Image (cartoon, rainbow, N blue to C red):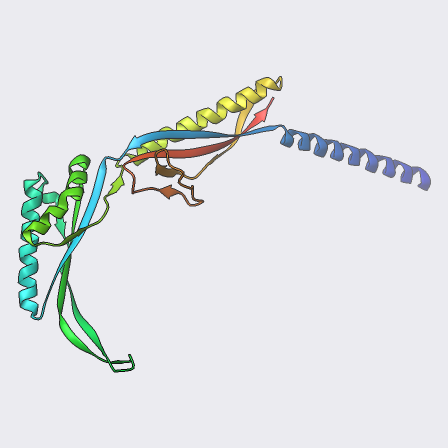
Length: 243
C-alpha cells in the first residue's frame, strides 16, 4: 500500500512538473514573438529668432570720465541701431562693469617687484533679441562702421533659435512613430504574419544640428545655435506583438 501511494505521488509530481514546464516554454515563445523596430523623424527648418551681442569699454585714470565716455558710446550705438531699423525694445544694455587695471613692474632679473595702477576700465554689453533675422544678421556684419565714430565695439557671432520647437517635436514624434510602424508591418508581412498590439514605445533623444553638416550627435541631445538653417532628428523605438 505504501509503495502504491509513493507511486501515485511521484506520478502526480511528474505531471505537475510537465504542465509547469510546458507553460513556461509556451510563455517563453510568446515573449520571443516580438517585432522591434526603430523609426526616424527628420525635418529641415530655419531659425525664426536671432540673438546678437557685442561689448565695448572705456579706460581712463578717473572713474567719472570713464563713465561719461562709456555713456556717450552707449548713446552712439543706440542711435546707430535705431537708424538701421531696430526697435528700441529689442535693444538691451547690460549693467556697467568696473575694474581697476594694473601693470606689473619687474627688477633686472625679470622678477615682479610690484604693480602700478593704470586706470579704471568700464565695460558694457549690448544684446539684441529679435525675429528680424535678416536685419540683425546684416547689422552684426556692418557694426564695425562704428569705428569711424570712435566706438570700438567687439561683435559676437549671432545665435539662432526656433520658437516653435514644441510643435516641431510633436510633428516629428508622429513621423518617427509612423515610420517605425510601417517598418514593423513590412517585417511581419515578409514573414507571413501580421502585426499585433503595441507592447512598448521608447522615444529617442531630440537632436538639432546644422543642415548638411557632419556635426556629431550627443547622448544627451544636441542643440546647434550657430547655424541659421538646421535639421532636427528624433527616433522612436517600438515593440509589437507578432501574430
